[in-house]
Image (cartoon, rainbow, N blue to C red; front, top):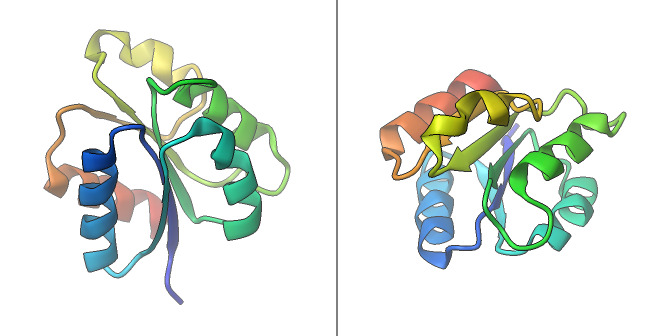
Length: 119
């Protein structure tokens, strides 16, 4: 069965390359550039993994991570946070994420972290 991944990033170039890379790796990928779309998409798409950009308008990726982890149906879904703020790594883990990928990131690292969390 194909694993599903939901990606949030307000940078369309990053969304496109992550979407393309993960689709190539045989994942079903849904992407959004707006934080308000995340919980409705989590509920309708039922992803096996969620990737959230930390810095987006509205709710940040950490707050969205907490919301997902607090949801009884999705509390076990792994969440990766993208961040350009590597000095705040311990702060990001406090939101309950399962992994952090620092921007700019390597696509090999992305695929490895996704595969490690989703298998």
